[in-house]
Image 1 (cartoon, rainbow, N blue to C red):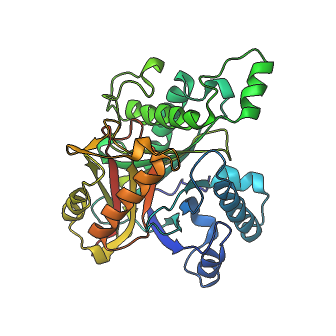
Image 2: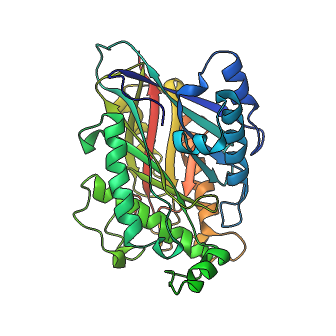
Length: 363
């Protein structure tokens, strides 16, 4: 990770539309124009136009393109980029969602005389063995790393954490077979369901780290929906074996004009949750820098007493429907389609709902 020994820092976030998974031109232009120093980049969170499923290779394609650009500009091998920048690509821009990147930077700054400002912390777990995905080991390692990322950001109080974005691994047939050859049993042989288990275990790790729940047993993963985090956002992908964690909150000792707040959507059409965040931050829609949210088809099959069919569609998975629905609801509230909306909200907000966070610029 970049040097964080400076006691005072400033967070910057650039929101860059992309023309495809390999489109690094907007970031290249920002670097060439001096808008951003690539050495200050600690995380990149983005939406790609893949299907968001096990075989969504747009996530890995986008990740590789970004690593190659940063490797070139920083003059270091790809292996070093993997250690200093958390890259979280979420597949699926159904409906009106627009593919984009959120480039997050930490810059050195003079000691600010300001209220708490946006703070960014990053952490990487160790790689997980296939048989650990969706199990207690993933919960525990995630909780430990979230706490380390909070320390990295200088956030002491869990109440000051407003969003924890995690990219987590999934199972493939090759990984399942590798575990079997060692005599190890994986938690499921359904590769798609493994995404849910990985997301769920990671989210419970966040809840545990922040004190939102007192304990998280393996048996609770994707079963006990009373256990959840109000700030976790987890996205599974084939392109990695560890959890890459980005903690966003407000903390003293940070400069700049960015702040973050969050609320919880009680269901997929709770767009007023975004308005509540704007009001709490004291900003208007024109001051929004980034919106991050989770989406899930209500497991009851109903939204406010009305039947939905997302769970019964055999052609399009419910996570894709949910992204489109929540994306549309939030786009109407925010007035923009450059929204990071991730599907699959297991233990991320109440069942059928999910957290929404907004980064905004204040005077």
